[in-house]
Length: 369
Image (cartoon, rainbow, N blue to C red):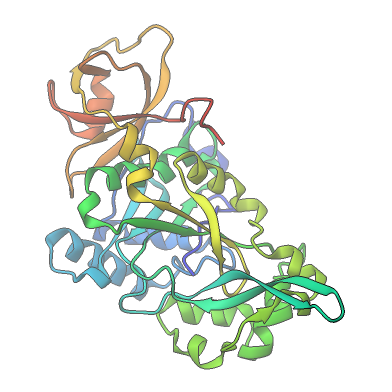
């Protein structure tokens, strides 16, 4: 229940927002000093964003967990990373995203698995194929992409792509810190009244509480009620309302851009959906992700005039764990070097000749989704 989302309300008045097209942005790991900004962002999360709510104690605990993960003090079940996107010019935080090392080891990680059951009668010469949903822990041990929030004042200009895809650069640098597979739960379909047809047709009958309350309980780690109250046997989808059937595996319209970004990196919808709103769960092998396959590690060439002929947008990251920083620049790698402006090099904290990680912002057209 750690769904990707998008913000719907600006955090600043229009005249206070710098021009996103000209402001340098950096994605870095979050620290204790980011708590006030994270609280402000969390107030903008809508229903279904279970992993990032405006709870000061929960967010402070999460930042503490990030520090313990980096220091090597956290067990695998508790390891997690939280990244923020910072406007270099002002120091303001404009977005956040998360990455969990392994889900389901401490708290259960529930999904519905989609299965097909065939019923046949030779005597009547009748057969039927029916979709079922079964409560599952199949994704236990997967790493998870979660908590993607972007201030709408900063949409466009590659900001959403930088925020989302920086995590893939991080995983490519440190594959030993993650599982062999990664998943991402996406927000499911909600109607114009803000209601989930899937929840109304199924979940509310078993839990006897409203969606937001169930959503909140899972966000604070109280998940025992899921195993206690959910049906123990497969659910025949045909028994659900037509609206609920149509919503299974459908992505919330505000989350479609986030889905496209994940699919560009190699994530695909599999056999699992969320147990509350039936949003899709994207999956991939970490070794098959684009950043793992295609990242290059040239040396930095710092030049006052960093322009090149026919530049393309590239994700560029500093190598290092706690020191990880990523940004988006226009350029083109040479055989062994990549040219950065002094401002970009300073924002990343890299020096002349230092090795960096470089990846085109988008896959080749033939691979693009």
